[in-house]
Length: 231
Ligand SMILES: *Cc1c(COP(=O)(O)O)cnc(C)c1O
Image (cartoon, rainbow, N blue to C red):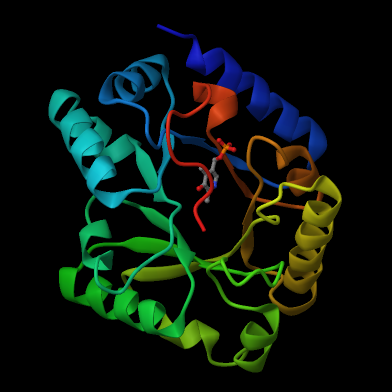
């Protein structure tokens, strides 16, 4: 089995050297089999990221059966787009979702959290590149609703901040522009909230721009067999 924890620790150290912010490293285990998650857990990784809800439920239910203490000490982050129809399945498995991209799913998430009485922390996904294949709020929409955005929260549903990604092309100049836009937006309008920006190919610039959560898959677990960016 691979030595995931050494890579994880090395990236954590790099994050510390790049930023004064507190930065959480999410190990994105989407598409990787249960055995990989199990091994990473045994080695000491406690923050995982998954896109596909049924796949995550299967792996992390199994992990919590095999290691009952994982019920309290593992955070699973949902990093795919949140859909109103399936978001009820998030509760109990995921501690965070980074993909709330519309007012209807935000309203539904808050309502469900109260009903289930299960805590979920969320990021509003932003569309920073204007690509219409990308899910998420434009910064203009967020600004127009600046004064009411926090009203969706309740005891079980906590707003952590904003998630943003670079363009699908992976172009690093454009990615830097996108991250800079979100970083400035946060600084100016929502300075107490956090940022979820940065993946294997662009996390150093994300962290230099103040990101608090980076979501790293292939650099820790190797290339995936299927599935790349969520759109
Ligand atoms: C897959 C995925 C990641 C991780 O991507 P890598 O390039 O493998 O680090 C991060 N964020 C989201 C939203 C993803 O879908």
